[in-house]
Image 1 (tube, one colour):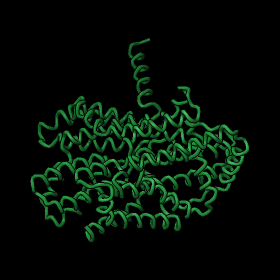
Image 2: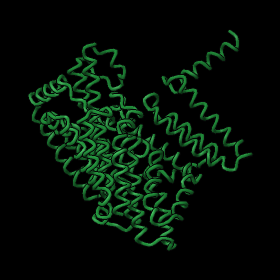
Image 3: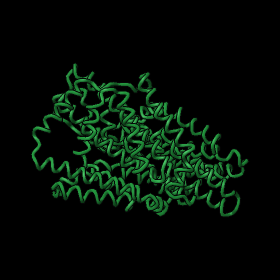
Image 4: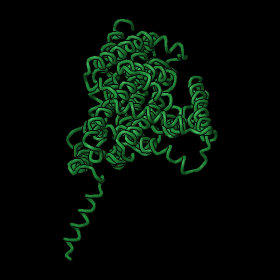
Length: 510
């Protein structure tokens, strides 16, 4: 056996293992990104002074590409390679990444503990939302109900928590159809279900997947519509309120002239999308699925033992406690989630380690991905990619500053993290206020523009909203084929109606 032959075998094995089952063209693109970044970072500054600033934007666009291809390859691996290279090339440092993670520790703890806590409440949540689906025959009414409930819950709880609930419910409903209607074992990782389902069932399966996509997209958009309204709806809201010196009610009052019209238009958009069946909406729940859910619900009610009913009741009590703890903010969200885990498992008898481990499997990959995202944010911060935009706006005519701040925050939030964008802008704005560059009145107006700018336009892509990104990278998104492109397409009508509404409200009322 020649040395050349052995080398070929080894290289072939490396190529096969690299990014696993991802398409070959995708693997080549990621390798091309890594090579290009290194060459550009080292050589381009020799003839182009702004080369490293440009390199930061290139890296950001490459990371967004990995998010867009989430159904081809989970973004953690290719995005992580880009982040590791950024550290090696000194585009950022481990200290900067740790600082970003430390700043967003509350979000990470929320994902780790709150999502796991919701897992232990899944029985009572499934029962409640199953009743909702079965009792609401009209798809228009059901969609309106889901977007409204999601918005209200997000206003007083947290968008990520609400999204975790929606994912848990959707997985439960999907499992019912897959087991009962399709009459085949449910496989969590069996993404090639089309080859296993009988021909006459594929149409029902596709219609059911479309129905779930409708409900999930309406609901996750609802979390954005409600999250912008109150101090606790989104992580950046707390930051903005603290720097502006607003309490809970002051925040609502300052935001209401923009958030109320946007909320109304968002609900109207939902009704129109369902009425005219456009942008992939308006798909009814297949009757076979409804019958499967009804049969499953009837079977469970007949087979439940007293201990099972007590478990569901205990989960209901813990769920009520969760709502009150979130509304009154008795502790950081992650710690509340940990409390839910302790109470729910203690009261329902889940004391084995292996039974608890399943609860963390959904959120931990996304938590790791979020840490990689913060590494990219560290690059943005260290290379000052956004600073020039802020200084430019602060030197404009003050009458135009609110709408321009909204537009720039919105644009940057579409491609980046809205929490980071709000942090950067509010820090710069606070410094300008303390230096008496701007008045208190203008400072508050710009704070409102920043909050709406980081919350409303960011529904356009999964990049800006953590809730949208969480949904994109979840198991249910893979199962119902909710890709990055499809999410952008289905969010487009909301973007086209809500963003202009917010801009008009800023011009007229702010």
